[in-house]
Image 1: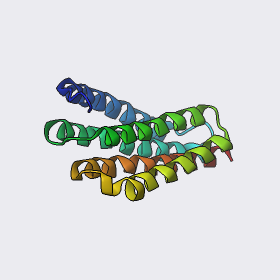
Image 2: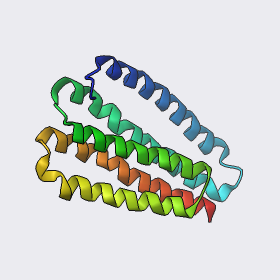
Image 3: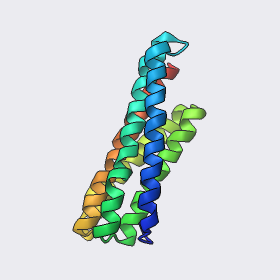
Length: 153
């Protein structure tokens, strides 16, 4: 977004198509065979849907952002922090640690406050539009964290 790279839009569209194929395949497998621990099948099904919704947000907004919107450095930095939360969740998924989940929750709350209270008046309309869309990823991450805890316990 910072470099206004139009090739990025095409790359995201290709990645989106690949992710959708994988998502649909994974959901079909869960529907047909389930997970080895049948009680956890629903959790994994829901987790895939949360990830799918999270993936659609950047896909839906990227072309619009690059073509029409002007984002400040501050907004780009906040989007970077949101994507860092996804990376933190990835780590917490594969190395489950309740303390990491707690840190993700705290950081999510801090990012929401940063966007909608601390920085709101200093951001342009374009920044607010983009950050409002991307902040939805934070909510999806919370749902994923809850599912991960349910799988573990």
